[in-house]
Length: 200
Image (cartoon, rainbow, N blue to C red; front, side):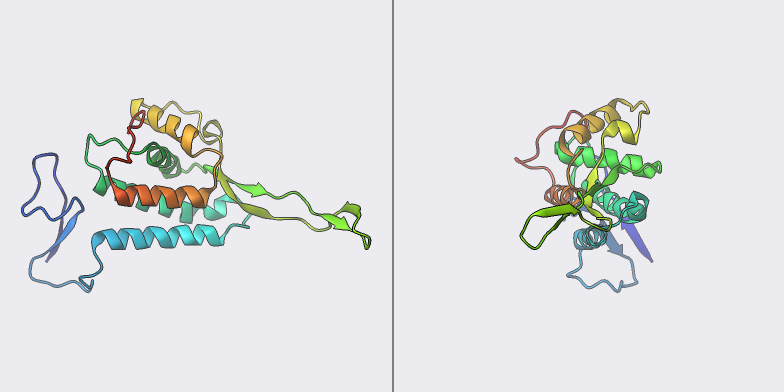
């Protein structure tokens, strides 16, 4: 039977300690997962695949059409962060802000919008502008919207810190770029580059 053994709180680690990631314990049955595919690799690959689906939808106009893919990427980033940061570790501020966005998506709120490109001008034979371009120009990617447009609901103490980090480090920036940066921060775990957040 296959069981998943989670890490316990500080000082209560399972033996032997291999890493700060969850481990799969084989109790008789083998898995089909090759040894080279660690839990960290599986999480990273799943998240990267979701981010690439978001990137492929850069010209999608309706933000709801990205809901499942952005939500999945946010989920995997959060799971990764839960495994690489222990209770009491300070999350990097950007990662804390992304987790606030994950919390909003969990409640069915959309935290991004398309970045609309201005219509192109039609250019005449001599190079001069002859009028506005024809046809509708679609979005050129998506950006994280103002936190107050996402939710005006009161956040708890931890949520307020995450909201502040969202406003300072995520809001107004490109969705795909932020997802990629957050995944890298979650992969790296705590270290000298991790700055304390207002609240994790």
